[in-house]
Length: 396
Image (cartoon, rainbow, N blue to C red; front, side, top):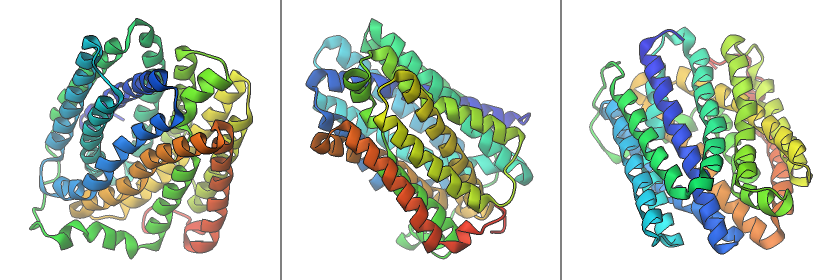
C-alpha cells in the first residue's frame, strides 16, 4: 500500500504487536517457571480480560469523539510504561505473581482502549474500495510481528526477562511516535455522551444479523479453541523443549497467518465469502485437534500454522464486513462491540484453557477446544443461514 498515512499505521501496529508478543512470552515463562501451575497461566489471561471487558464499550465512545491518532499514541505510551515497570521489578528481584498480574491488567486496559480505535481509524486512511486489501495488509503487520515477537522474546529470555521487557518498552514508544505522525483524517462528529450513545454500537450489531452472526461465531470459536495459554506446558512438559521452542510454537500461528494475509492482500477474497468463513473455522478446529495429540515439534508447528492461516481468513472477512457496513461516525462504537466480542474471548479463552488444563490436563483441554470449534461452526451455519449464504462483503 502506497498511502503514507496507512504506512505509518502499519508500522505503528507492527511495532506495538511485536512488543506485546515478546512481552507475553517473557511473562508466561516467568509465571509458569515460578509456580509450575497451569492455573497461573489462566490468571494471566484473566488479568487481561477484566479491563477489556470493562473498558471496551466506553473506548468506542472515545474513538467517535476524539482524535483517534492521539488515543492510539497515548495507549501505546501507557503500555510502554507497564513494560518498564516489569523491567524494573525484574531487575530489583521483588516482582511476584500478583504484581505481574497487576501490571498486565494495566497493559490490558491500554490495549482495551487502543483496539477499537485502531479498527475505526483504518477505513479512513485509504479509499473505500481498498479497505479489504488494507485489512489484509494490516493483518500482515499483526502476523509479521507475531512471528518475530515470540521468537525474539524466546531468544532474549536467555539474557533475562528484564531485557525482553526493556526492548518491549522501547518498541511501544516507537509505535506511539508512528501513530502520532499519522495525518488528521475524517473530522469527528462529537455526539453528546449518554448511556444510549455508548450502547448504540450494540443496537447496531443486534439489528444486523450477518454482523451479529459473524462476530458471535468468532467469539465462541476463539473462546473454546484458544490454546495459546497452554503453549508453555506443551513446550516444556509434552514436547520437551525450552524457551526457544516456546517462541517457535508462539510464532507458528503467525507464520501461517502471515502467508495467508499476503495471499489475501494480492488476491482478494472472491464470492461466496460466507462459505469461505465457515470453511476457515472448520480448518481452525481440526488443526487444533492435530496440535493437541501431536508429540512431534515439527508437526505441532505445522498444525499451529494452519490454525493461524484459517484464523486470518476469518479476521479479514469479519473486519471488512463490519467496517464497510458501518457509518464512520459510529465506527468506534461498533468496533468496540467487535473488540469486546473478539478481544475478551481471546483473554477469557486463555483463562478457560488454563482452568481446563488444571482439571483435565493440557492435551484433553486442547483437544476438546478443537472439537468444540468445529461444533460451533456447524451450529452457526444453521442459526445464521444468511451468513452462510453471504456472497460479498459490502452491502451484505
